[in-house]
Length: 327
Image 1 (cartoon, rainbow, N blue to C red):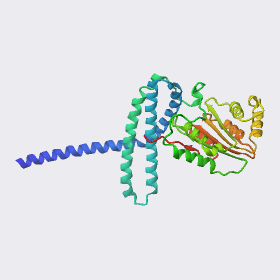
Image 2 (spheres, helix red, strand yellow):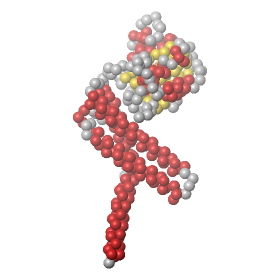
Image 3 (cartoon, helix red, strand yellow):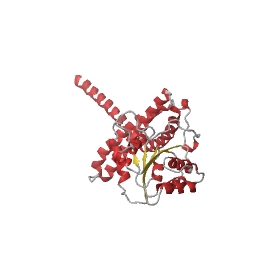
Image 4 (cartoon, rainbow, N blue to C red):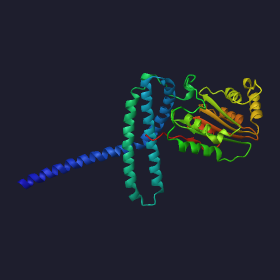
């Protein structure tokens, strides 16, 4: 009798364990089933976050609550980016694996389950953050839907008073990109630095601008562009920082400004920083590149921007993506 009872209890426990395992497998299968959809959704979410950050950063000012929300949203965006990068690495490993499919699918499948759970956590985290989204009246959309405004925090070429820690490698990489193209005259090299807002792009540009290797150049120019893109104003700002007979920086046409820049920079070594570029229209960016090209001169240009597509449109080589510092 005791053995029969023990057998029934064992059978019951096994059934419970089997049911629990089946439920767990079903949950993981459901996660994997929705994983690809989650990937597409998170790509869309990153675009939305990027637009929201652009609007929120302009509104933040001294509002501590807004800055706290902004910080959390940035961390959420970085978490999603990490997941997408890990997913790409896993996909590449699976594609390049030289082992039989039935063996390789097990570790890859496990990794997908881990990433699916990470994606679920990221989704829940975003849901919590977005509860506060509407209360700040941030608009979702591209930069063209945002009202024109002027950033009160215009940047300059001056290095910040606080010591800069952890960006030596990025500084050297940026300088290498600027100088590796050679020293041929009649050459324009544009190196965009792109990344999320408040990542340190302007500070990195300041470090490069103040490097001893560029202090030897004939001219160094710093122009704060901002979202209000004005090609004439950019040209005037460049001219105003060069030794002239006076009056050229008030020129009212693009042709006159281009002629002045060509005359003043002909045969020179020049470093120009265009900080915080928002303009994404190809026609305007082509005009900007033409203005920056000076015959028989060595022109080195750094452009900081938040958008990768802008960086690629304006770049003469592979743009540089600034990664966040280790957290």
